[in-house]
Length: 322
Image (cartoon, rainbow, N blue to C red; front, top):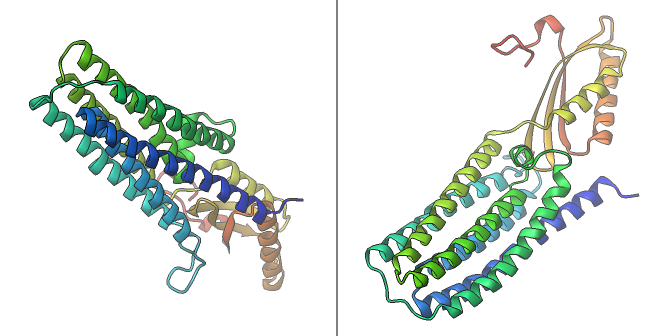
């Protein structure tokens, strides 16, 4: 029988495989792209080299963030360091925008204003073909792992509700990388077909636009995780069902949850206890509920249950329970 700890270790190993796979692919591709750019003077190849280096740095930051997020709780951070991963995810988004998109746009602009003489594009095509194979492999691994976690949800909804930035960041990066390779290839071909090196510069700027769009999407998702996002509705309903099984609880006023890391959830519960329940019986019932919740949902790292009359329960401005 596989326990929660074994499942968590297996999930961590899978996430690391995705990150290490992307890191190795990007390092090799980046070196090849820079060599090709140096020989041919292609703007889009230089841009793609920068893109691969930025992606490599991003994978290093995410691996570092995962390592830091595993530290146990202490006095300064009683709920652990899980959200540090979300901070590094936000840094990754900034790097993609500032370095990836910024350098791509600038390089493209320079090559449009001051186009370089065209040279034999063969080496560019060879490097692009190898890069497509390596990036495609990394993308396939990311797709496979993310599809395991998304369940029956659509891709976009799964990304919006995902609490693990490492998975969807690699997916976004690899998708942008494949799109960039296609644009770079078209740019190299068109610049030679029409004998106009400025087309290569335009391709570089288009790659910058794609990277900027990806960076904005990632920053938006990372911001939500940093601020604090609730657990998915199915998990909340599971918590409610477990509490409702106890006859001495007459109503569940509200259940508030927040992810402190991808695998760690804090839950605060307000429940109306039956009149006449003694303090001792109430304490024992709370302990029983906590055990049941931990057994059913191992991701619940902290559980807070507050006895509260239904009429006194906090409500939101729209009148709904908090």
